[in-house]
Image (cartoon, rainbow over all chains, first blue to last red; front, side, top):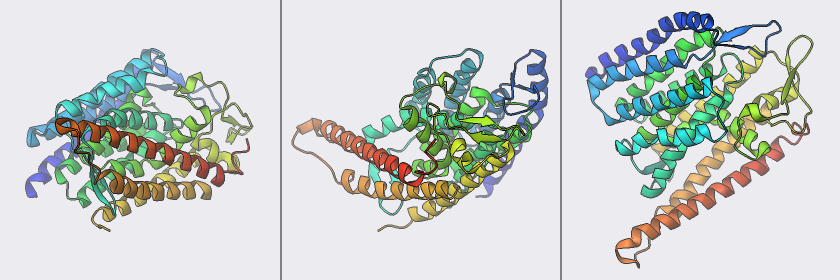
Length: 330
Length: 75
């Protein structure tokens, strides 16, 4: 146990400070190169640097390489390769507008290293009822998991600080669950995701100085998905991610097809005169988590963000309860 | 907001019940009549059962969504 403490401390410090110190110069470079987008929820014409995925992936790769130096686990290699591939996919989408098919298909390919490296256990663990062996079905689950978690986090990246703040809550919850299950090595490997998200949140929180972009959101989602698979905590990970899953579910069940947000014509929310957000009555607009939160009346961007964080904390509590239920058998 | 918390909780319950059905149905399921290829048939049928369960899960969730958010969804 003692031998695990040093790599844990080094990797967490590196994950946090690499993002903390590389993001400000990245913002300067992006602004200088005019890689900025308009913040749609600000009254003034505020331009924000994008994509912040560059500093996020740097923090993850550096900390995971250090951990690989200590543990030499195939699981760490799977995290590095899949997450880096997800970053490249997102970066292409940040630079060039791609079709709705692009991210799901390429993220499915990004999941293949997990299979090739054998960094998974084909037993799917359920609370109260035990495990089920599904060798062939599990391969399909791996290929589906990364596009789902990647796009789920990407779809919640709609307001200042929401994606990174949500990731802080969900990823630290996942690490706690892995520690409870005594899967210490994967728990340590998962910690950099929380620290990277926390450092990035400093610059992403309202008012944002940088947006993660597709590259950053896909890195968050893909790494979360890989940890769920290599840690054998797929169900727990899905529960901690439920508010974002609800957002994707509501969106897909109202739009009824896989489509990019920018291809949707109807607007789910609009601004009031005092620049609060309110739900529209547009029947062609998709139903989203933010639209449902706003059904009760207009709110500021900050209030919506905190409402989403409260939902994330609630689902994190459910995930931790589920983890304790893993040890109970009916 | 209370509707959203209710929906989250309902999803959690559905996941746990769905897991129980999955373990109960898929766990002991095995076909031995096809010689060396029995695992292919077993896996194939397991995939079909799992997909059917997922479709049922989504349908229940969809009904639940309409019930919980019947007031909010009148956009």
